[in-house]
Length: 445
Ligand code: SF4
Image 1 (spheres, rainbow, N blue to C red):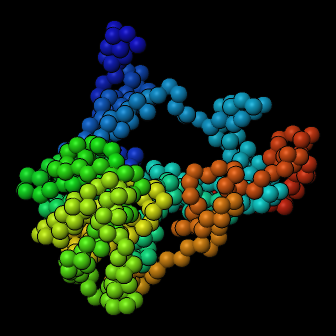
Image 2: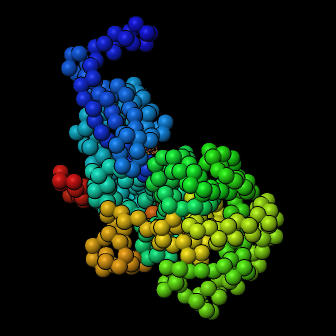
Image 3: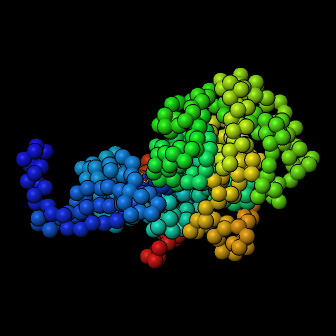
């Protein structure tokens, strides 16, 4: 659009209202202020501008470039505004009734011929930010009856949740750094300045980190890459990719060597002696700082110094995420990170690693047993396994991304039950009464 056309279009729209919304793109849930205008003809509403909502108590006016780009997404001419149904190899626009009719006709055929597991479902990140979707998805999954379930969680965060389930008794008992009150923050394999805290939810990380540094605090980053967070840190230690577990194990070991283990508030919940801390100390004995240095490229002296700084700081916390989780020792890293916090008395204290009181679903807010004392009831995994690699389910899901080889039963070339053409179908179409879609028809989601 040239400038004159653009100004004409702008003149035809007048700002008529301001809307306040939550950015749906990630868990930081930043507050948005949207200026909306309507065409002179009174047609569809258009977004004039998007900026951070200054009065949002959580994000305090901060937004990242992704939220600004929501306007482009909203106005993108290629955006799907109606269902498409594939006919003769080409996608064609269809009404919602036609689309649902097609699903009802074909989905049942596929499942009847190849089993429930012939259909997989992948749940994307924004689902958890939409109340309607959050309520409807469990019913959809149940209706499909498939165990082939994948999600953004199994893409990168399950090691963290698995360890929280094992250690704290609930998938969603995920403690997060209390950055607003800490003096020393070690970030390993994470870039919260870009992500705003994956499984932490800390919008305006830059502002909070600056405030910590202004009150004399220190930010240290261990990461192979000089990330945005590393560039803003007081110290960046470049690590060889995949070696995080060695450094973390050496740091935990060093706490024992230096006699710096101090459990604090966690003491009543930690087993001592042969089956507990003593077993941990023995298991980590081989992981000396020198061994970790050879694996990681981080000097042994730095590993020892970091451990002593962590133990000595008045308030300190260790945080790790994606880079530390999406690797061979992802769950081990998540466990060792929490051990560092627990063994230095940083669990559940101000300035340390604290349990948020989530609005729902967490052990400390869920109704029923455990609601008052915040205890979970433990977790179970491995109730079924993926078809090819035999990986256990965790949280009812398999590792993403799904692919036909890994997940779904393979249809024979001769059998094409989902083919709309009787000529290519080797099995008869199901009788009308043979399969009843259990689609939840309630509109009260
Ligand atoms: S950090 Fe960016 S993408 Fe995430 S909620 Fe805030 S503005 Fe949206």
